[in-house]
Image (tube, rainbow, N blue to C red; front, top):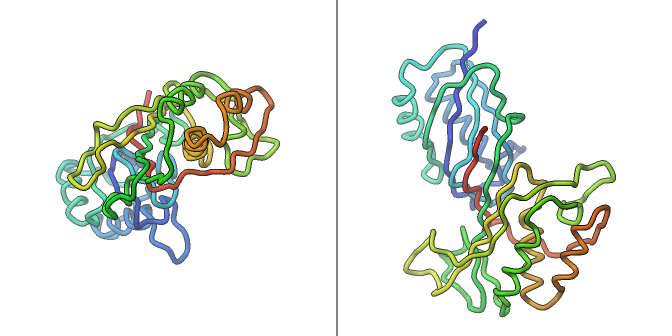
Length: 258
């Protein structure tokens, strides 16, 4: 039987979800997406497959999943509107496009960009909590900017993988890693200054961005040095980084398929 393939991009606020992947007895993004698809497709066969998993409380500006159908969509734009109408308010579908059978959303070469939004030095309005991490200690932002640049390029990232094994692939390349003042997200209840860690690369390991962010926070606190970060990226080096930054500050910003 011929099948039809579509890529749908979505945005979501991850704060009330236990990540993307379906799990028993908890509310996940994939569960809500599939429930909605089942309703709008009126029980017809479908399968959905994500380009990657996000952890509990992680949000996305542009995530993507592939939709497999046995019948073509007569009007993809109308389908997208109906899909949006029935999705919960913290999930929104952005685009839909048809792809061929050769496209594989998991194995297809792609570049992902993550943002980590944070501030420091003061207790923030509770409304900040879903997308921003607040560090109450003082931070040396200039030193953290230097530390972020050390992650750029090809390095050995075993120190930045949650529970690494002896068989993982830890030689990875990060295209961009920079810490900048936030000008993307604004609200009248935000503190005066907020910051973003921006990271782009082809593939990331479990909790890698949050471990990198946690390491930069410890650098800014004076708990470790630039030399420690340099050493942690040397071939076959493993230094257990103890601080994993909270998930709620992490945002999947974009996915680029080649």
